[in-house]
Amino acid sequence: MNNSNSDRRKFIKTTSALSGMLLFSGMSNKTKAETIPQAAPIKVIPNRIKFGVININHPHIYGMTEAIKRGGGQLVALYAKEPELVADYLKSFPEAKLAKNENEILEDPNIQLILSSGIPDERAPLGIRAMQHGKDYLTDKPGIITLEQLAAVRKVQKETKRIFSIMYSERLENKGTEMASQLVKSGAIGNVIQTINLAPHRINNGIGKTGLAIRPDWFFDKKRYGGILTDIGSHQFDQYLHFTQSTEAQVLMSQTGNVHYPQYPNFEDFGDVMLQGNGGAGYIRVDWFTPDGLSSWGDGRLTILGTDGYIEVRKNIDVSSGHKGGNHLYMTDKKEMRYIDCNNVELPFGPLFVDDVINRTETAMSQAHCLLATELALKAQKMAKPLILKK
Image (cartoon, rainbow, N blue to C red; front, side):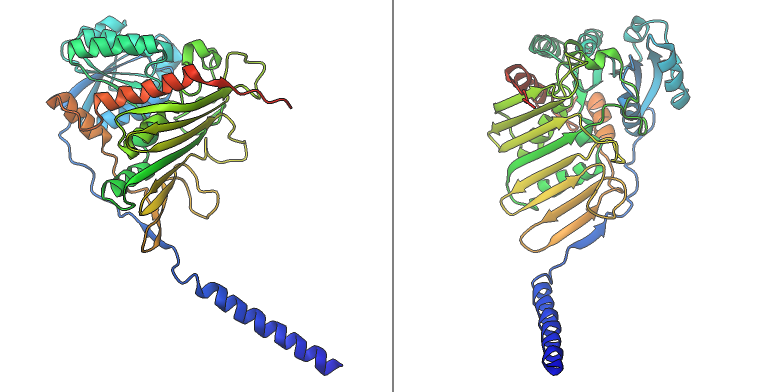
């Protein structure tokens, strides 16, 4: 009996080992890990243009300012109504001269470009005034919060031939997404079929200089920020158009809701959208439900499906691995599975945008693309069905 039990244990141990060998023999093509090497910074001539900043209600203005400085812009002036915001900004950018009012900057003939991260409903009107004063304009998203504002911006932009641009930073200032752009452009996954954007955000975000630890009243007022699809959704519409190369698109379905914050009746905390365009399909989900346990403001993910493979970008954090920080890219094609650490990727938006200001070109982002992304966001917001959870 004892010999029988011993033989049985040996048999189970042997077959278990063989089973493991067979299982892992099918996984010989392990994920290839690589890190993009540190490249030399993009060479630009310093102080190629002079720019001013008007209104700084969202701290995205810090990243916007850095991008234009990287591109060779010289910050010369600042105006904002809030003394505490001015004091903080000048700690980071002491070279800015504090103007007495908005017109002092708009009427300065030496300033070519205006940046703004004012309260959302004030951004498009400021951009119109800037263009009418002969300035180009770069605003934080959402740059436009109604279809009426969009029509006015298009009219003045056409009349003045000035640039009205929106900083879609989840693409333009994210290194993982920039690497995805390069791979898709090279044909690494064939023709793009669909993009999926998942973009959770944290309401009280004190991480770094990108968020607001305490949200002001306008943040909870849809009339002032435009709604969740207009606001944080605008990033995702930009990425959809960019990666599918769609120049025409329609919203097939959209819904929004306030499912968790009854104390803010004019707020939306969830939204999603389905899109169809002449270059591909798209799905977008945005929300304000990043849990406190996450060490980032949001586990943003972009999946790009192609005919020959797919890419997933984990923008800010990779919770399923030991990889630190953000800018993680996974790609599977016909040959292999790859992981790419993209933290050394150079961001070209700043230099390209300054080039466009100087040369009157559209290398950073076309005017048509910029405004179509916003148009889709506004239409999705307007047609959204209410999401009501009966729990």
